[in-house]
Image (cartoon, rainbow, N blue to C red; front, side, top):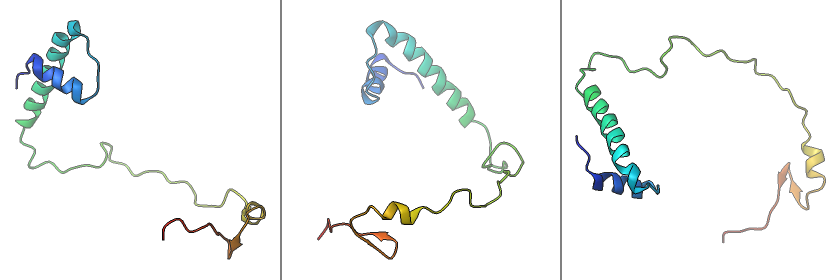
Length: 95
C-alpha cells in the first residue's frame, strides 16, 4: 500500500498532530514502511500456530494472599455524617 501526502495529512489530522510541512514527506516514508511490514506479515500462513497470551511458556508467580493492613473502617466512618451497617449514606442523586 502506498501512501500519498494527502493520506499523511489526514492521518495527522485524525490523530490531532501538528506536523510541519517539511516533515510530511519523511513521515510518509516511515508510515509506508510500517504498512509494508504489516503487508509482509499478512502474507504469512499462521493457521497452524496456536495463539498465545504471553510469549514465555511459564506461569506467573503469585504472592501469598494474606492481610497486610489493619481494618480502620470504624475510625474512617467515625467522622462521616451518616453511616449504617458499615456503609456511608449519601443524599440521593438520581430520582
